[in-house]
Length: 203
Image (cartoon, rainbow, N blue to C red; front, side, top):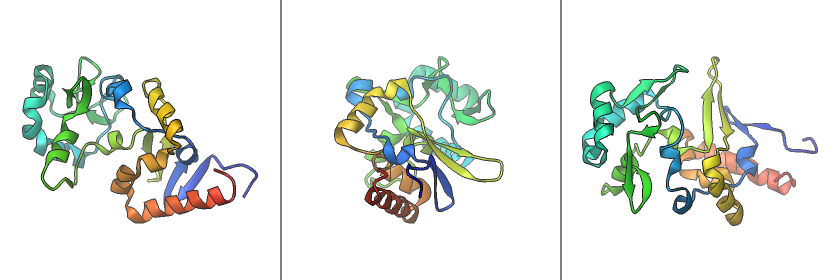
């Protein structure tokens, strides 16, 4: 171990940026109003499996979607390939995710809201994992290596401020989606590494 925390750590087979352990973050919807769903120039990255799951749930959320979103879905479906060759959710007006809906002035995900309203409350699919994991971004390299990076976006400044006030690191804030993506055992290993680094004074 060096005298400072290495920028990249390996947890199981996954490479992670050390910022995920050190940066603090907590969404503050009351301030940002869900801006991440309506800002940007492309939809949320999705897998083919997620597209199939989303297509199965479109009818459940159809009435919550805007007329523009419904028209886009009818025309090109729930996803498209962006300029970088990535499969992403369809968008309206060049930025808004088609699954945005509004409640008490907040922009929410219609898919997530529908999933959490179900009686079981444990739907295997809530929303695209790329959305659930933000501000972590996942990248898979040509050799199959998976890397997780911490991304900073201006619209999430309030989330960074709230995270600092709560002393809540990114990996703890994202416990549920990290477990959903990588499993309980992997997340426990991540926490064990973080605890060990705390004891050694690196965090």
